[in-house]
Every structure is written in C-alpha cells, then in structure tokens.
Length: 340
Image 1: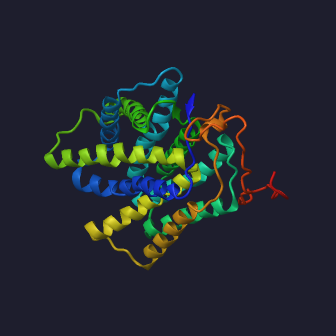
Image 2 (image 1 turned 60 degrees about the vertical axis):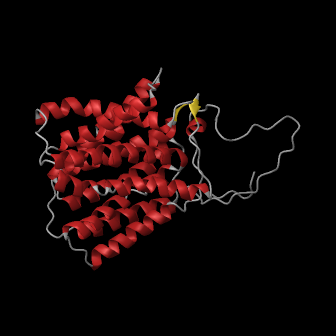
Image 3 (image 1 turned 45 degrees about the vertical axis):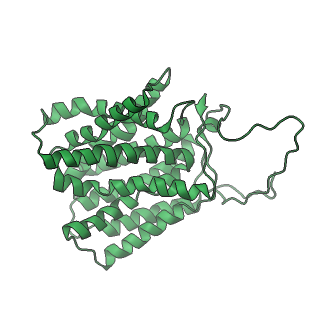
C-alpha cells in the first residue's frame, strides 16, 4: 500500500512551502560553488559526486532498500530526477550562455502543468498557466544578456533536462512512497539510482577522476550533502505535501538566488531590468503558492485506499457536512451551479 502524499493545509502549508523553497534557494548557489571551488570542465564528475555519495549516505542512515515494484520505480524516478537531469543540465550549461540555459530551463513549470493534467488529473487553471509564463519571463529578464547566442544542441539538452525534471516531479507525486518508508530512505534510493546512471557515462566521457585540492573537496562536500542530500529531501517532501505546480513554481528562486550571489560575491551587475525580472519572478512564485485547488494524493490517483493522518470514523458517530469550497475554475470546465 502506498504511503499517502498528503496535501498540506494552512497553517502547516506555509511551513512546507518555506522548507521546500530552501531547495531551489540552495541550488542557486551551485554556479558560484562550481566556478569558485571545483575543477573546470568536469560536469559529469560533478553530477556524479553530487548524487552518489549523498544517496549512499542516506541509505546507510536509513538501512532500507526498495522491495517489489519499487526497485523499478526508484530506478525510473532516480533517472528522471537525477541520472538524466544532471548530465542534460550540464550539457546545456556548457553549450549555451548561462542566461539562455536558465531561460530554457525555466519552461519546466509549463511541462509540470501539462504532465500533471495528464497523469494526476490536475487540470490547469488560467492562473496557473499565467503564473508559469510570468515566472519564465521574469527569469529571462534576470539572466539574459545582449548578444547571447543560441546552440540547437544546447537548447535541446536544456528542454530535455526541464522535461526530465518535470516528469520526475509528477511521477514522484503520483507514486508517493511505500508504506513505512520515510523521506530520507526514498530520497536515498533516487540519488543512488541517479548516481549509478551517471557513473558509466562520466567514466566514458571524462575518464578517470581529476586530482582534487582541499578547496575542491570542500566544494564537493557542500554540493553532495548540503546542496543535494538535504535539499532533495526537502524537495521530495514538498512534492508529497503540496501540488506539483506549486512546487515547480518555486523553481525561479534558483536563478534569482544565483543572480544575487553573483552580485554580492562576484561583482556582477544588477541593473533595473534584472531587478524588474526578480520582482516578476518572485511575484509569480508567490502567486503559485496561492492556488486554492487541492491536488489528488498518489493513493487517490492510483485507486488505492489512502492512508495517513486522517482518523477513521466510528460506526454511529455523527458526520458533519463539510462547508462548500469555492475552487478556481479549470480551463474548459464550467463552474458547478451548487456544491454536491
């Protein structure tokens, strides 16, 4: 039986949003750490070190392995969220200027909205679509620079990385995790599976690992344990408790954080256009958390009986009727005349 992925409600929802937001904020520091602490031209090795040690650490701490169908599910989720996502992301970063790569990746929320409608039955609202478009536009203002050149391979890699991450988010929401398995163990499965996917590719393309300095080791330690292990636990926990679109619309916090760190630590300029883009991206992120629609839990989507914190109703106990909930009207669906 699947562990129910609860949808958080106020006031706990705000706490889950804040904790989940720490993940993309942390990922916004990746560019600075990569350029200032890590050896150059080793994107696959960096992706491998981000994923595999963190996954093995979580497996050692939890001492839980998948069983049954979850071997396959963990492999699929690990490949989508880590194993395919990291190499495609780094390929896009190397083939495209940073601004173009960030803009291509910012279409991820639109992919999530489409896949959530297809796989979760969560039909998009006008607000959700406009918010996703506004987020991508805000990010483009923050990171794009004049004269940026396009590369078709890089653009394709960026789009595929965004699609891979979007599919991982939606399937993580759909499948949840097995009964009795915590977020640490489930995250460990995905990171380990993703790292094992990257390992042969890294060895084939980049060869033996480079010699590492103390600075390199410090950078990799931060990426593996703070930037990846802790951040992905928070991220996957957020996917369980929040809607898929709400989680993915926290993504613009990453390029915004990267721009702020670049300004504060690297002396990069932030002009009026970049500040306007930040305001739009942050506004879209906030608007994405105000969506009042309640997503389906994985157990409901797959037709299994939900489990979790709801107490069973005893026989003969009076049942109060819930007050009608006013929901935003999905695209293409007429509002109901009265609550059923």
